[in-house]
Amino acid sequence: RQPLSLCVAGERLCSTEEATAGSGTYTRHGFIFSSLAGCLKRRNEDSELPVVSVVRDSESQLLPNVGAVVTCKVCSINSRFAKVHILYVGSTPLKSTFRGTIRREDIRATEKDKVEVYKSFRPSDIILAKVISLGDAQSNYLLSTAENELGVVVARSEAGVQMVPISWCEMQCPRTHTKEFRKVARVQPQFLQT
Amino acid sequence: GLLVTKCGLLRHRPAGGGAFWVDSQQKRYVPVKGDHVIGIVTAKAGDVFRLDVGGSEPASLSYLAFEGATKRNRPNVQVGDLIYGQFLVANKDMEPEMVCIDGSGRSNGMGIIGQDGFLFKVSLGLIRKLLAPKCEIIQELSQLYPFELVLGMNGRIWVKAKTVQQTLIIVNILEACEYMTAEQRKQALAKLSGT
Image (cartoon, rainbow over all chains, first blue to last red; front, side, top):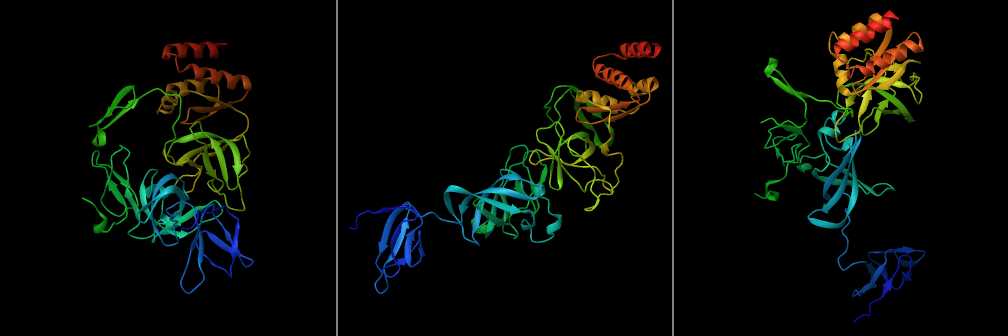
């Protein structure tokens, strides 16, 4: 049984001749350094060098990669973009939410100039989006809904009731029968629960 | 069914399918798309001016939203200027946006309000009364002295007459019109034009 060894970010673990870098580490000047504060794990491979990795919690944090479909909640809108909180990556919930941005030109695939953010999303909508970039220095993931399967899944009307989608651009409130504009996602039937 | 959310006088218009609305008294303005308002320029941020319109958020006004404005030909707007414009975007989720041109690109009376004059605030109900067609108050005042008047739906009125004294008299009458009856107003104006 290996003793529990902890390390901090920036600690030099070993040289690249003794082991290979795993997750939570990086190599510099021929040495392996830790990039997280956590437990040091050494896994012995049969033929190659052992793999050294640093793990923060028992479950590793799932980070959204480029091309992953994420579930987000819209927190604020602007005439140029919408800011969202990323809640789920695929089907696994995140322990802490990440922030994302959807630019106006990334909302739809066609007729990008005529898009109005107010007619596509509203604050507190739940949307499916795809990650197109890991983002800038403000750690905002850049997301896109420019596909038929992406867009608004759950939305509340001005009366506070959950709306029913009636087309790719409209949803209707079942109580007041007023229609509101949203960019609606065409969710595949196997994911719908009735 | 229809539910009333504010207290006031219930009005009904049977024409065109029928419409119900409530005439209520209020001093706090909430931006509505299409309303013409008077805004005060508080800041210039890049290509956009920030205007105080009396709502919960400052409105934005692009420098290209004036008649005949291009990237080379910028309008001469300074901090503290008064602008008469209308709302292009106004809802509870986004910051309001104003423009000084209408749909066809003409200014239609909107734009920067000139120098001098006096800006003051009244309740929204009085503004709607003054904006009604054939408003008696304005007709009677115009027989007193000639003056320029701009009414903003956000409760702001700008007045300019020939002298400062005449301007202030008109301001006082307009502010008092809130609570005066028609009789009292006619008496006050008769006294002023007599002296």
